[in-house]
Amino acid sequence: MIPRHPAFCPFISPIHFDSSPSSVLPLYFSYPRGLDAYGRPGEANGVTVGFRALSDGAAASAGFTGVSPSGDGYRADVFVAINSQNTSVGNQLAADIAHEGSHTADKQEAVAKTGPDGDFMRSPGNITVRESEQRAYSVTASVLAGLPGSAKYEPSRGAIIYDPRALPAQRNGIATQGINNVLSGTNPLYPLEKLRKQILEAGQ
Ligand SMILES: [Zn+2]
Image (cartoon, rainbow, N blue to C red):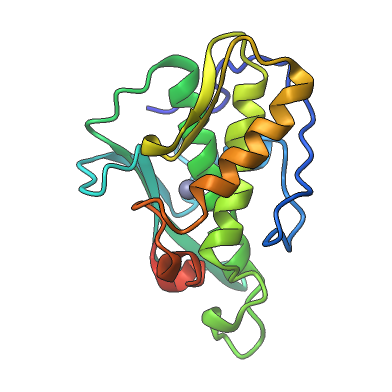
């Protein structure tokens, strides 16, 4: 059960990313967008959350499973899987949930922006995996930036965690470097061919 508003630290620092050459979309620095994507308990919004063994070692994933009729149009169906071997607890787990919520929001937006031709793949919201990850990791960084605990860049997890000695002013740089490193194409979780795919094509 995912609480609708986990007990995040409210002191979220604004983070600015301007050194990534691949940053072509505005980034979202607040996590409410990602949390809103989950909807309310019992709401039939196409989002399901559960546990699953993820073979690639990811902490969690947000898989696009298709579309369903909704109102006059369609909605995205998304399965958010928390890796059953995910050892994250507390705020780190909350950051993972917010990260996947950002991906979920991207998929919802992509389907919602589908044109009158009904071709989801051609939706202007069908951004690349790289763009979606940049958004999602900016959310991760925003959550972690507000935490007093230890945090550092941890490439094996595909995560950005800050050193407790890092000053708030240093955290922008750490987050930017961490995101660029995670998405450089050398991390096994994010090979280049996957980063180049569109989110509705990649299925996650
Ligand atoms: Zn992600």
